[in-house]
Amino acid sequence: MIDDLPRLLAKIRARLRRHGRSRHEVDDLVHDAFVKFALYVKEKVVEKPEAFLMTTAINLSNDRYRAEARRGEEALVEDEVIMDTAPSIEDVTLSRERVARLEDCLARLPRRTCQIFLAHRIEGLRYQEIARIHGITTSSVEKHIAKALLMVTHDMEGWWP
Image (cartoon, rainbow, N blue to C red; front, top):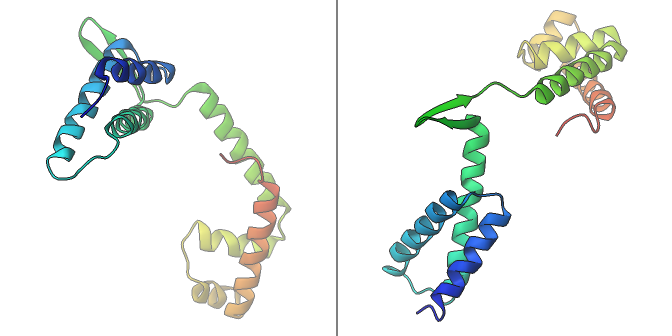
């Protein structure tokens, strides 16, 4: 089924190592990819098993990266796992800069437009409720919110990932 298994394994291992995986992680990922392959071929025909295994191993690696990013960094200390789930200093600093930039953007909005925008976005009020509170039409509320969104989106361009 697979012509040159040692060559394929070496190729998959090298690719995973280039993705920053340790030797131990590579072994786990290759094993998991072969398990998925074995389960898959029981039900369906795989025309290109080498491509299937490579893609599966890379996808598993990417899934692990995403899971690790959600959980935080891990460090193994005498068989105990210590996880740091706090955001990094860079993330905190960038977040503070974004909030300051957003505050500046909101401060540049006309007072009423800002109040209407925040009533909808922060307080979660519906357009009809905002219109009643401010004594304006629903159409006017829509225009205020559209204006605010346009200005904030323009001013915040490049400040969000």
